[in-house]
Length: 411
Image 1 (tube, one colour):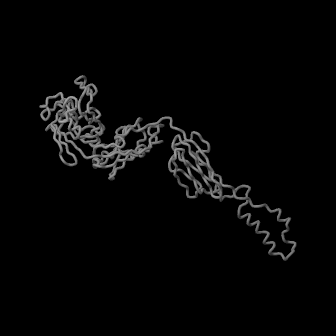
Image 2 (cartoon, one colour):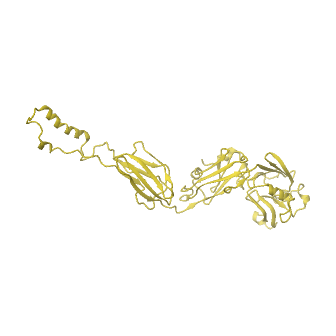
Image 3 (cartoon, helix red, strand yellow):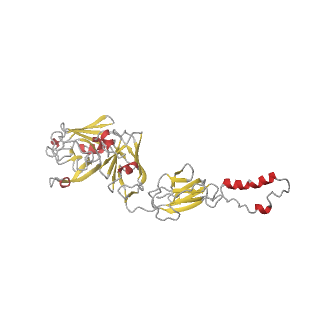
């Protein structure tokens, strides 16, 4: 966007007297009077002085606003500018119909004011500008609306309480080209304070986490300032909001599939040990750090959904808690003999605990573990015979070192 040329008011203007020239001409008359004695014929007469040209008055300051007054579809990707010629600006105020105001700054000469941020799309703005010695000038313009938009769906939910392993995970509705611009528009802060860094998993997912698990009792705030930020080319964000959630007690459960046992540690103390059954030799369970991302009192599990054909279809699996997107759960199991748990790994990759059909037996291990758990709790699987789970497979970025995690930031 071009910037109007500002003439230098100190330069002589064509057809005008300079200040020095005017003073020189005015100085002629007193000189003649001083050298003459009263009534001398050399003194200037009233008729002689009438031939002298009067000095021109200073030009009025002229204020220009970009976008121009009355613009209906103004650009929202450039700042607002106010300039003055033949004067200096004393004040500029830019307010939106949504109640917002644009801050800005003057240049050193106070001949130009530029907004610190761009105006929002789809908003009417009123600009009130004043130059020294003049009345205020008021103009209006309305910004255009983007033709295409994107949003980010975030986890966890606002005002929820999660376990210490819960990252802030954002899935975008469009692939993001300008990752730096989008990541810069999102901040995650914690109280007590801790460094929180973003990591991109592909073009549509951005997760945030600290170096270590959140401290129990932490309050986490997600600030989205995506409105009018260009993610994909020509596609702009629409969100501008703050979301707060909380971290509850610390619970970390370790599954040792060599011992076929799960130990639950809460706030540093072991509170339960359960016999379990993991994946068999042909369907080994992922190893590594996993985070509970979904919870179902009962759910259907069908082998065809995880690429295992028609090997099983169970409509009422009790107390199922998801660990990976690909289909790994820790869940109750009522169809296997009780002798399996703690002795054999017989599943198709899930971690099973003895449970009862109908999910209503409060004494069953599956019930008890489910009731003690929450979204964001950590489950660590060891000695499974399988490689470490992909960090993008679920909310499992804790399997990356801090250096690896930070390397995935676009900033």
